[in-house]
Image (cartoon, rainbow, N blue to C red; front, side, top):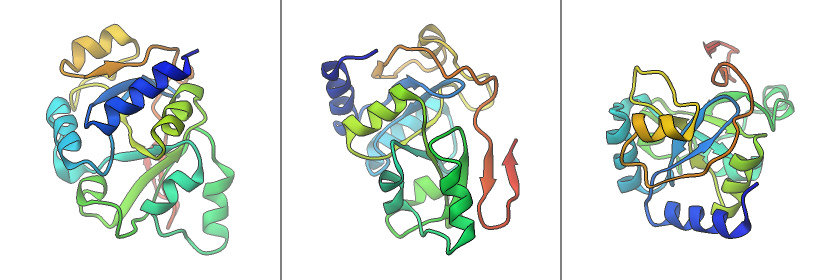
Length: 184
């Protein structure tokens, strides 16, 4: 359990453009303020990830995700909302607020409302959604411990220690428009 003070420090690191790692449903994620271009550039450089790949946004609740998406009408959105909070990432149409580095230029944004208590509390302390990608260099195995984060992602400003949610694989990603599974 993290104290409110630790969460405030972590949120302040993010607000100042820092890159932070924290446990998620399956692995350690690494992320930053999605609207801070310099922080995202640092994150992408650390991961050696191309800008055009886009980034997942994770939030504590639907309200934190909403500014970045155009909700689907009717049943399509109900399926998404029924899966949250939980380990389900969905591709949804991006709103104009979603920057290019989040969408990768696709017009879609990958979003998740997390059920992981520490990830949720971090988003609440920050006051909004965060980028959330695996803590590793692109193409390498994701970190599952704080030590692996340090070894695989040198340059991370801070790590919130804690257990992952116990899933063996990262969250599945599905396209909410057509149901296509992007990542099983």
